[in-house]
Image 1 (cartoon, rainbow over the protein chains, first blue to last red):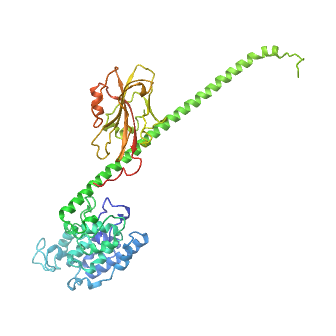
Image 2: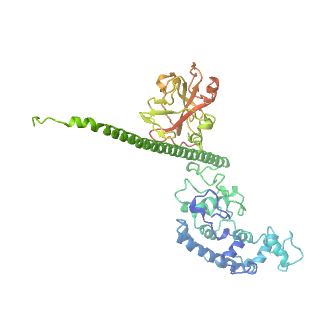
Image 3: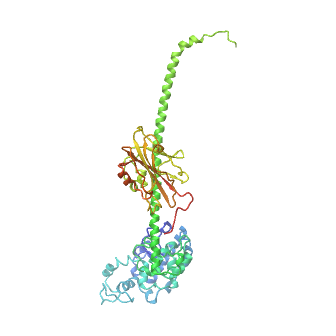
Length: 334
Length: 176
């Protein structure tokens, strides 16, 4: 699942759709709900999750309607489990988003402690002034993507957990997953190794399970650009290398692919130039021939005129002599 | 010659790779198998196996021309280590006649591209005097610019090119 906000520039068309609700920021999510819930802050975590699932479902139905994602859609509809408070730790489900958020920004490790960073340490949770929160939050929570929030809140763990599968599978375009999720996703490094096998779109060559690649990329690369395609897609693994992935081999493979891509681009550019050059030449020739044709036609008209005039001249001279000649003898054999 | 739009020679990168920009001041036609070759078209190796008739237009038989035919994409367009590969060199061609009236310094070698789609370029120079031109030691890595400078041929006066690729497939991909 591509957890980035932007569409990778190099992905082919079917992948153009944004991954899933999880990659939306709070702000965007809010707006998609039509501003239904004014402020997520005071919403319960439970409610938040429910609304996310709602949004996902609607997206799923839309996705299946538009017919994108060959394998993703079936899995999707089944994959959106109402996990309900199963996924939410007790501690979290009762908290509001606001509180969880404060926990997140305040602390790196444990949830529930008020953080020292930019908040008044003495003030207990929940009583921090609204303005402060707004200041801190507006540029941040609103812009934070849902998934990152969930990760940080501890709702979603980074270890491979079976419940994780719904997240990964919910994206309508599985193809995109294969790139995005392996490289840029923190949430499901391992299970996707297995998942990919089943859901790989046949168009992708040699894509095998590559759990190794996940740790290579920094996990919190969510809000960043999805550059997973523009440098070489690391998850690509050739069939021969299935068992022996060292860091060096992966690099080499990546480099090779990069070179190939560059060469391909050049070749394509040459091809286009060739085509265009020929086209220009043909057009020029057409123009030339048309011109020539026109001239010749005109010339011909001229010639006809001259000839006509000549003939007429001859005709006008003829009558005299003809009358003379017309006198025939009547003693012809016939 | 139509210079208002981008010239096919520029588009095909002939100008740049082989020659510098020039103003065409002569005209010539290349006939393979009695069929006029359109610049930029694609021909098969079988069609260009035999030396073409290169007809120089004009009116003054006293003007002499030198014709060079090179392949800038040898051995492959993505890796042209042998640029330019000299296929033909004829000098002292009188205007209004064709190349068979000239002096064939380097005999015609028919194109045999192995990898990729190659351009085969004809470049025409106007000679100021009748001159002796020596054949280079080898065909590979010929340099038309240097050649013209060395023999005082000045800028080219005309040029056409065609594309050619291997007759039976797979001039294409090689991994690596």
